[in-house]
Image (cartoon, rainbow, N blue to C red; front, side):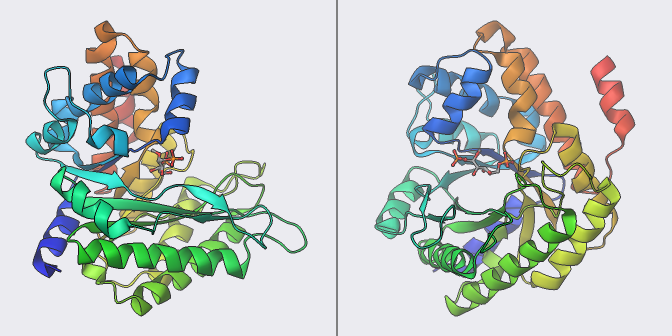
Length: 346
Ligand code: 5MM
């Protein structure tokens, strides 16, 4: 394990004013996204869409520190035969790779899942490194639901934390920085305090497991959910409450040694995810750099603007650059709502 290299990469992933583009939608997820814009999910269309994003020089150079890729994408070449991973690296950004194999039912725990993909992970990482990957991602999914017994269970939290920590240790052994993503879903009807309680339980368990597996915290990036009301709860917590409860939770759970925190957006609207990140950073100074690793909240508008047409690429790239810039400002607590209006009007 090359500790210095891991620390260098992890710090670069959370560099000032930059964050991560999560473009690692698996085949089923990208099909859903393309269905919504009336585009067929063929290998070429997926390539063209992602090439359009990665060739958005303004966004990539200024605000995107790294891009999480799906297995298909890290092997793909652009129309001019340049590997997509090289386009990312040439823009000064880091290619990364999703290495989990998705969620499967967790037996004995109805309606809960375990993320799989540990078998053969070491060998796969060696190949991904040769293809250009410098970091990896593994996402565990924790749901919240009332019932007897309620969800999440102790089993789901511990089993997923154990797998995430094993993954992180295997990554570091192969000189790949692990993004550790234990996502507490915001899909339920729960209130913000329930989210705070479950997120604290999940993160405390996660860091215990990372310690047991001897993971070097300076060489990881944590990708957590924000502490937020469930989508089906009519009583929405204010942005200020989301920021305050998220910071309280993270300060209680995340050791200062961790290289950085890069939030997932989890289904928040584009501007909402930016505002929350901004308010969180305005509560600083915080013990770690706090930035974004958004999928939907970065891609939603560019995807819609592109809609599968090459002639829309420039407008889609401008929309992507704008969203990336807004989130870059939010990662420093420097975003203002006015900037959205001014740039929309321009
Ligand atoms: C881009 O979406 C990622 C892959 O999802 P699937 O495995 O379901 O295809 C996903 O892991 C993503 O990185 C995180 O959920 C964060 O994305 P959001 O959209 O929540 O910011």
